[in-house]
Image (cartoon, rainbow, N blue to C red; front, side, top):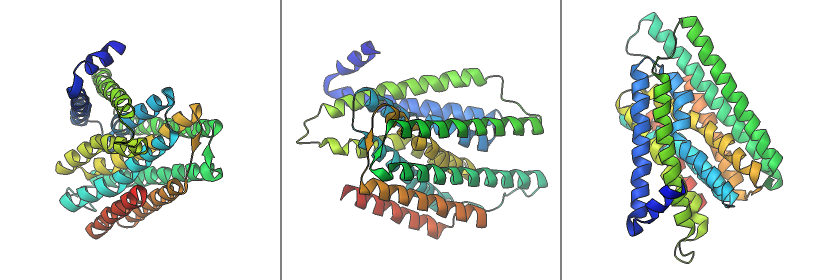
Length: 327
């Protein structure tokens, strides 16, 4: 690992650009293998709820681990996670719906397809409910002004329980439909881990590089925002790729499922090692996130889709979030 870091540093002024390229190439590898899994028969709901959140959220996980290991500021982890989640639920879903729309019913109207569509809606609704409650838990735990070590363990326990439920749900579905994962799944997981390693190396180096910059030119407090922009790129890649392929079910489940990685996993990881101080803005941001989850849940349950006019409203909400945070 140190040898790789030294090799990147030896590139001099080109090192940050090399790390950015590595980060994007690793993300492209992840998207490519996810598409192969989709072609091998892995359902969109399974991709969006199990595989994609880990892949698109790998940067956030690595960011939390790196900062915890290097004694970084927990506020940066909170900003990174909240920026990522709010961007997913406003900008990425909103733009995807504005560009490609989101049909309320399948184009193929045979019974099997309609039943599968309804099951997908139920799964998406459950994901949104989980994101809403996870945000509520963090908001309640942070009400005293800090997220302490045992708060972190509570969040990690919530995440493990949620993943156990997902595994049970997928196994049950496969048994009922007499389906199984493709035989190449171990190979695909190995390639996804290669992509994850690329994300880890590039993120680790970029965080160290950013912290070494002159604080007079680049204040340390913008690390959370800058890292959030970087970490959201894989999410954008997934959203626009599957939006263009008319797979809005994957777009929606992947972006809502990614919220479970940031909250509670990433915040829980850091808090388990170091106490995180909270602020009024961060509490406000959690309220915004809960409101977004509730709004998406309402549209999914009532209409089965997100109308374009409300997609535009979500873009406006993203602008307000940026203004409130950066101001």
